[in-house]
Image 1 (cartoon, helix red, strand yellow):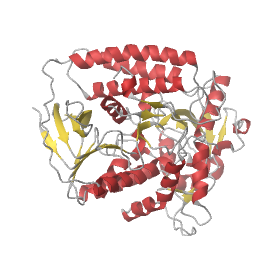
Image 2 (cartoon, rainbow, N blue to C red):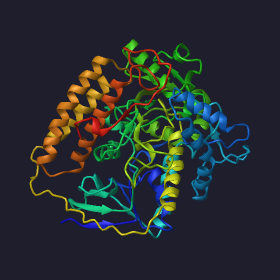
Image 3 (cartoon, rainbow, N blue to C red):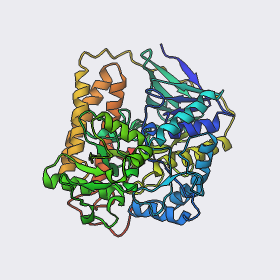
Image 4 (cartoon, rainbow, N blue to C red):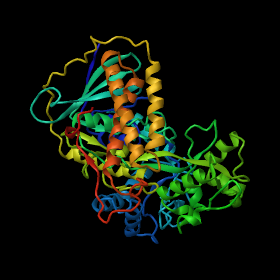
Length: 534
């Protein structure tokens, strides 16, 4: 039986963006944070590298701005980039106030150890060893559990947004969401004056990814079905170096290893990055990923190797304890031997269109973190700008919500979730088969290197899948797996349509049919009302 829950603020997603926003508002508002799995199961906790910010006196804001623009292939929004970079130090200071245990260095003027990653011209990455995301997530979860007005709810899968438009009422405002409680199997309604999508990206649309299983584009799909525009979904970042091992599911080898001198080599020990970019291993991720992909295809190899062994055991163990131990568990001593690595889908640079306050096209609906398109990343995300974006825009959205608060009670009657015409499925194998097919053809046809023919093949397949999935969704009782598959197929279609519209190669979108970059950089913006698929 459906229950109705009313809050001031509803946050869907318990990663860095959702937690930081929730903590900002919990002092004055009743806040709920929903997680579809355990609270720290998302991508934020998996982040290894760190947070980019100008903290050293030898660095300048202009340097960080320039590096971000260059990495984004000149497609980034200069205003969004400047805003983010200018707010970076305040965000780091706030995290320090929350007692995030960043790695310290008494010899550095900042008091913290700063590292360098690909695309950065200076050392400006503050980190907690090689597990920054976990340190940040655990700290913010501790603060959230201490907050009096903040409810943390696990195993709650958002299905769809509730809006006045969907209810046939005047205006276009978000009122809440229907949510599947996986503990009971019931669908409940959550209503709030402000609803925030902080659901992460959609890298699970690809066969090989560094992301956790929950990165299924839920927020993007829900926002699209509610009528929000999305932008630049063709730009999917493939992290160059994920551990290649049959037992190493989704384990990332941090870019900081290359920042500390790690060399990319072939099986025979030969370096190869000098043939692709003068910045070698510190070139932006799109260049490094394409270089590795090129060498693997040229040689028919399953992987390349990343060698940090020349730095010695003491250095490697102290700087990369998590990576060192994980590799040792698999029989790889990275202080002696090179690490087998392959590219894997890592980050969704596009997303739900928002302004500087995180506002979407629908009143009362905000999007923050990887699920949002702020204009910061352009055609390729600069390393360690992702966690930074979570805090800067999480705080900006919180300020806007608080400053525009109206003490009004919801008077709309939310209709109950109708599942009277559906039945339990006895063919859940269809879900797993469709899931596998979707991720494989996206990897084969919409991956690191694309062509018009590949995109056409992918579109044909995703259209058939969408039809099958929507029929299944209409006739059978929903489950967490079905909700994710439905969202992932929709996002895959958006990615393909976006890629077909870009007639050039820029940043993360590389096509053999249009290898050159056009002189004018333009965003790819899709509007739901222009398409007949949902």
